[in-house]
Amino acid sequence: MRRVAAWPISVVVGSLLLLPLPALASEASRIDLYGGYAQLRSDAPPRVLLDRGSHGWGAAVAVNVNGWLGLEGAAGGHYGSAIHTGLAGPSFTGGSMMPTVYYFLAGPELTFHLGDRVAPFVHALFGVARERVGDMGVDFVTPDSRTGFAGEWGGGLDVTLHDRWALRLIEADYLRTSALGTRQDDVRLSAGIVLRLARASR
Image 1: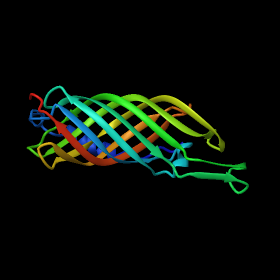
Image 2: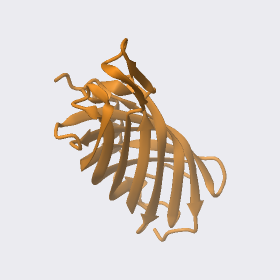
Image 3: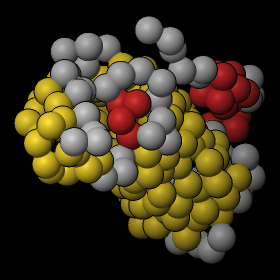
Image 4: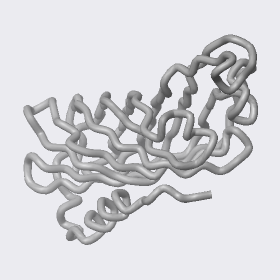
C-alpha cells in the first residue's frame, strides 16, 4: 500500500519545535472556536473512492489552560463524489452512493505566540472515525458503515485579524484511521476562521 507523502506535516511541526521557549509565554484566549474548509488527500483504498481529494469541513474547540497549553476537541467530515451504479458501473443493479468519512478527536494542543498577531500551533489528537463505503470498496449498492480508531498529528498557523477573530491560514495534519479493518494514512489540509473568547492567564 502506497503511503501518502507527509512532508507538509513534517515541515510545520519541525519549524515549530525550533522556536525559542520564551515564545510560549504570551497572552492567549481562554476558549478558541474554529470552523473551516478541509480537504482529505489519500492514495489508499477504500478512500480512493473519495477521488483522492475529498472536500469537507472541520470544526474544533480549544480550552486553554494557560498561554501555551490547551485541550482541543475536533470533528470533521469528508464527502466523495456520488457514484452511480448500473450496467456500466461497478454493479449490475441500479443505485448510487456517496462515500463519506467522519471523525471525532480530542487531545493536547501547544501554541507558540510570536508577538501579538502570529500564533503557530501543534497538536496530537485521538478518537474515532466512522466511514461509509460499499462492501469491500467495490459493491456500492450494499453500503458498509464502521467505526474505528483515529489519530491525528500536525499543526498550523493562526494570524490575528481583530481582538477576537483570527484567520487560520493553514493547518496540515497526518490522519490515521482503521474504521474499515485496514490502516489508512491520509493528509488533511484545512483553513478557516477562529473566534477567541475571554483571556487565559500566562
